[in-house]
Image (cartoon, rainbow, N blue to C red):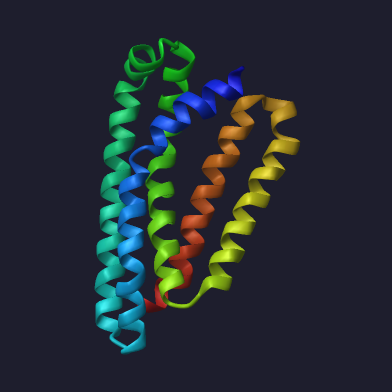
Length: 166
């Protein structure tokens, strides 16, 4: 039941703003592909910088919003204090989650789909590691730590791969 509250209530609310990041990422793909084909590295650099700025701005805004209003939103929307607690804990995912979404799209536009596959696979394997080894020891907090760490590492890997364009 705790996992249901986490995924069905709290995570859905925290993931809702990612629709904006997903929309931006869909628009980025053809822009980056076109700039890459024409070897317009200045446009690629500017697009990456603006995407990172947008993602971080959206992410930190949502972190701030969910951290300070999470308990209220959980009680108001779901009539659940547990959901409110999870919203407050999940808010720290926002910057990394939104950044990972947009940077993955940029990597795909640069024809680095194998790299994107590797990063996403590594991220999922890390989450599985936390599910297998940390949930038995720490409960649902182990899952939350794995979720946060996997998004953080995925974002960092994307930035490392894109650093030559910056």
